[in-house]
Image (cartoon, rainbow, N blue to C red; front, side, top):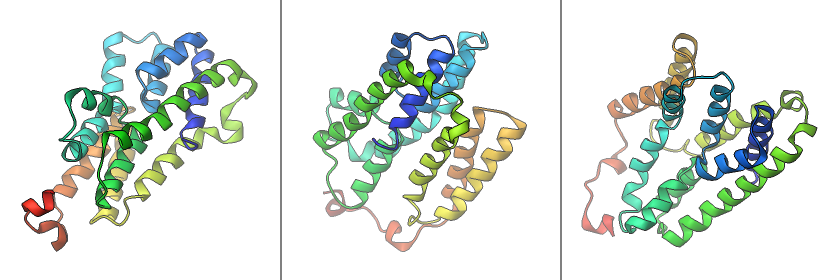
Length: 222
């Protein structure tokens, strides 16, 4: 919550700076609830881009959520349809990372735990968006105090949390290089998806350790 809160305030400030009302900014945070996509949306809204292109660009940024949902599906198969609705609505980067880590520790992923963790991030996000929208103009240029580097540092922290997994270093290296190359030759926001796909393709071809090659038995499932 502490690490995500500054992004909510930054979004609120940038939204008002781009012509949004305070209500518009909070409403977008409450319904879209995806920091990176909200930032991309702001940039596109300010350049009179066609609506279909805005939707397509936000889809490109949020493509990773398709991968997130596929990854945690095995942990929430016992949830009801209504519960899964809330699960996927609240599925942001830290939520995914902590769900995976909890499952790796052998602890149950219950709906109560998932919802509690999700609301700890979701509710402050709305509050910080509101505060940013109201008082953000007092900050001035975010780059002057280093707020523009918070997002890369935040994501790097999430990625480093998985550094003990098999083939972590080569997958991250290839994904990073592919993303950088795509940024220069294809452009934003497509570099996000291209980098992810490059990492997935490499991971699919690299061998896993023996502990991951054991067949899944009923005992493992329980």
